[in-house]
Length: 590
Image (cartoon, rainbow, N blue to C red; front, side, top):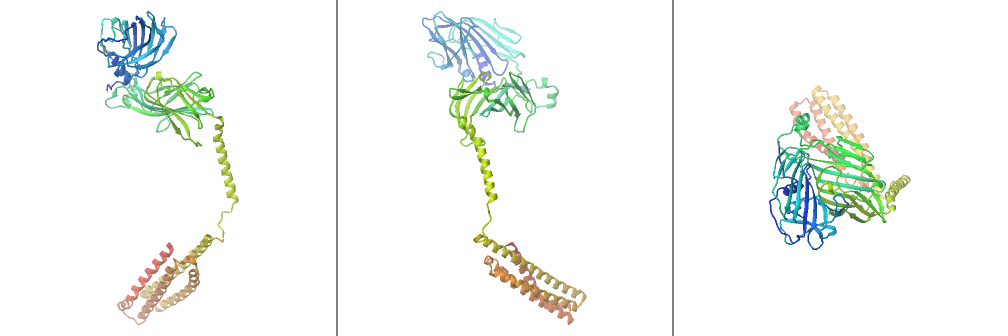
């Protein structure tokens, strides 16, 4: 089920026109009489269109050059567009577009907003003309004959106000003719009807037109579209919708039609997720038609966002005009029957464009920006036009005039050529230049000395690791002695260890001398010196403990007595071993 939402702005204007109370008022400008007024109201879409045909006669002594068109204030606030034409004599004669402006005449009801249509030729006494406009009608003048025709969308008509002259035939409701109606007189009437047509309403559309004098005009349009009809109430089942789409989803819409220029190319359709493949394209020599299907059907209150883009030939839309170049292109969206609450058109001109002028056939908010793209230096000037409440009738051609020097076209190619040339020259210079540091420089000498220090440290570490391995062998010989009691083997192991200690000491002596003489070893030398002293003390304590254990075994002392004799030595050996290993780890990190 669906609950009816508040009517959109244009529909509100139509309903307010229809549902009015009877009243009358006098106006100072009473020299005009509307001899016949015919109104046609089109309610077949969510954009309400009213066409009023007036036959006006001047019965006063003076010529009249303006015709007043009043609207209730609520209607005037939501009025999207109003245009007026005049025709002399027959209705089908040549017509002229009349300028319209808001006026404030004296002696009129304050609840009304007045528009003034300036006639192309003053209306003399007794002379008649035809005035066609596309806004809701309310006359400040006496009306001799008046009719109203309302075109309905073709659905069920729930109810409508009935007068003796009312007639409903098919999808058209007619009222009148009403004769000799005084100024500001109207009778209340209302129509309650069913309309399941999709109401495509764009909350915001950003249309970017980027001009490239290399032969292309790129159009990019960002849409935020909602279904402006009655909001969906309850749950949505895609299975039910797909099985019976024209019953379950009669008020939803699944596609939009965009009519692009005939030579549009490179067309794409995507959203934040990526490319949308549910689109169809037809093109011929006169038009290009793009059918867009959103990722999901849209019911009342649902909305979706997407982007379409396409390219156009430059020569079809940019021309030379009196020393300037001019862009001549339609202002709005190519979508059919869409109401845009906020339309922003951005015209991105080439970098270097000057003396920019804009000509738009209606009022817009205008300002300029700067956009930076690849290889831009000063940026590209951007003309921004904003139009609220945009309807298809606003999709007229507008012009942007600017000056552009053709030499500026060579700027980007020359930048690329210069950039590649500088890169190649830098490569040539780099390949032919000796970038090595001089062997006589202080930094190079310091680096060489530090490398020598590192090499000596590594050799010293290797000697101490071998010494610790000899310590482990002595410990292993004591374990073997306690298990086998072979004193001679234990003495032989001690003698071999003593020999290895002396050989390692010989290897260590020149390394220590070299390290001490190096200028880069001032930070690490104290630690190395302490390491040597601790390791020698460890050797002495270890050899002394080894001799004590062997001597105790030769005297055949008890195991408890042996442990008591070496307890102090054992503690000292363990402490020294831990200090030696800590110093080795510290030196390795340095």
